[in-house]
Image 1 (cartoon, rainbow, N blue to C red):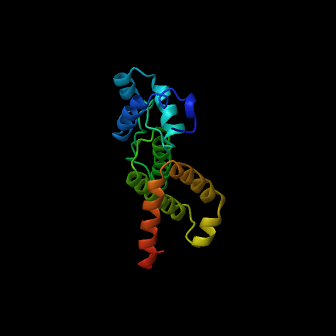
Image 2 (tube, rainbow, N blue to C red):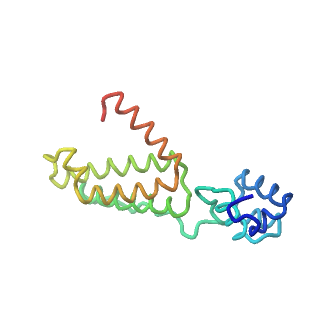
Image 3 (cartoon, one colour):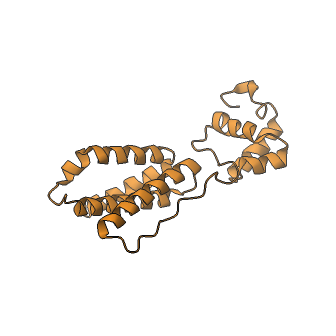
Amino acid sequence: MGKRGPQCSICKKSELCKSVNELLDRKLTYQQIAAKTDLHHKTIGRHARECRNEETPITVGKPKRKPPRMPAIEGLDDKAKAEVLVTYLHAQLRWMGRNAGGDTKSIALLTGQLLNAQKTLAKLNGAFDLTETQIVRSTPWKAIMAKVIAVLEKHPAAVLDLQRVLGELEAQGKL
């Protein structure tokens, strides 16, 4: 029985609770489970969050928005291309965070691509003489990292993958 105790309409009925939990374990969406059990999808979501302590709820149905599309960059100079790429990667990261649509490896990969694009943009903006310490202490970097951390908090497995990758890079002397 979960935190809601006897208030949870699913936990009150042990057979129903068992079947709903099995369907949740199979990663069905709340709407798919609702169709099989005649429960409301919000009741299932509340049970998953409050009684099962699930970190990231399964999305209900299809994402409300489509993922951002990469704008055309042909004919742009290198600086403009880098700015477009940084903007696109930010949008992609926000979309993944909202829709829980990205797996942890995709989020980690996207974060790395964003970092590389920002480094390229910094070089093109004439920031060649900046040290890594100056970049990390800069206000734009702190704002970016706050957004990245907010997205990563929704995906604990991504944090572990990122820590592993950073540890490997540090062991190789690349950090």
